[in-house]
Image 1 (tube, rainbow, N blue to C red):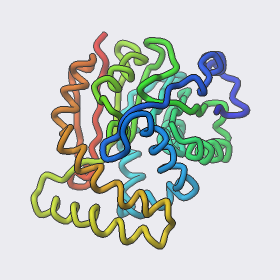
Image 2 (cartoon, rainbow, N blue to C red):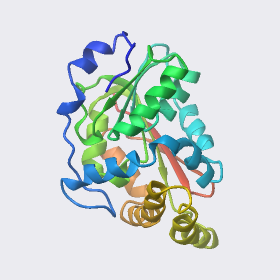
Image 3 (cartoon, helix red, strand yellow):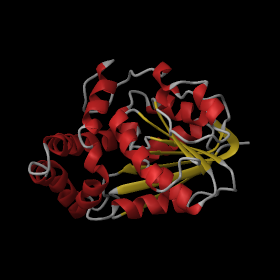
Length: 270
């Protein structure tokens, strides 16, 4: 899908790589394996798209938007830079970028319903000339090498089979000297905070999401084990090493809200 009115310099590029050509296979930690993973992820997020922003903010103790703002604050963008926002969801990060920078932004996500919600938000703000949304997968980006000045992704690596290959693909479309940035859930390092975090993710979330909706209850049951498993398999140091192995030599990291969220950023080798 694309925004309806956008006729900027992005239109030829996006139209030459239609979203329906993008592969939808892969494996997510804690989810079904093989070709069913994309269907699982799409179904999971399609079920909460209409209320995603509201409940994501509430269930993170109103930290969600703060994390997003900090992520965007680390971007060094020039006017008319081209930005790729992967796992754009309802286009929250894309809109935050557009609010602070005069850039052209392409948002990509696997969930059609999330993109529909994002498209409505883009059009409400009359930003459809600067923000385009397409459906696709991070593992198979429909763009030429070294296309973007900045690539940002949020809550992505837990849903892919091979984080290394996915970061390599993200780096592929990033120009030399361009920035790569990410926002992901993390695990607190302090033992007593980690204990509270585990209780919240494993016990509280599945319970409090019951009255919200069936879709949110599925997410509430899924997220705790999924985040814990990923943090064990790919701790922050390992992810930073993956970035370095794929052309980002100096990786900076900031832990937010006692380590519940992790923001990473770095510059691609020239």
